Image (cartoon, rainbow, N blue to C red; front, side, top):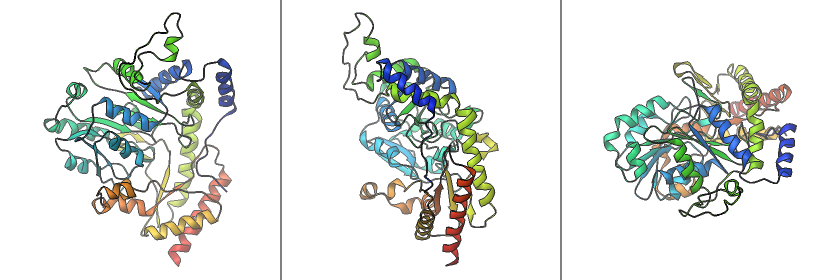
Length: 405
């Protein structure tokens, strides 16, 4: 069976993990702090906080910004549940909007129609690693500043809707000469096992807040918020005589460990020279073959207008003119040929919890169409040419069998 997206763990990563295990410092410590600085330098952001998941990062920023009951957060219907769940956790209302038919990303016109005086945050999602149109979103929040109602000190300082990018897929992607992580007020990456850059579990919050914010001050505050509200972390307390600490708020526990961080550090070393180029080659080989078939709608990985290039995290193939039932039959056929594929994603408003809250998929027709025809093909570092050929043959045979039935 060809797997869908196994992690690539090099011997160097294994060796470095062993060093950390032997060092006596395995929780948040020097390797995590170094990894944060390396991410900041790579992305061109102003500061970075590493955590135990992207989900924790999204929620902690919503809470930092004062999002609460009665507030609204705009996000695409086509995303993973984590994007919406964190809004629910804060007591606010997720306002789902439809997406684009070409690149799967949040539709700008739909965002504008959804903005109200209750809107506190827009959460664009870089689907499959392809950056959203951040210039358009920035223009939109400026245009709608008069609708923004301030309810916290952080909101007063920003004085507009916060742009919080769910960049879970897009580490290494580019937009107008800038890397993901520096495109929004705050961006959040995932380093889950299936992501291009992995720490096993984990995530990072990159800060690019405008003046009058001091991003390092915000970083320090988030460190406290994500470690029980304690004003000193374990590393700081190791200094002679520095044991005394205080709890300054009822914080959370979502720090990254040095064991996780060192895996990410090793992966980042050759991310641009090995990982991204290999994923790009895999995606280009798929498109080269599939584009000759009239039923194949191959994904977009570049947009010259905004100098956009994806991180090649997913290969979201769509089959033209099929139903969701036919899509499912095609997937079964591919699995029967020992090839693993996936679907990204079941739209959040379609899932039981959110449907029971009253969301209706009739409001998101493009999302429904994209989802009903989407099949994600395997993309990973160790995928060989022979495996790529096997995947393509399995897809082509399975699609044509259903279309010809």
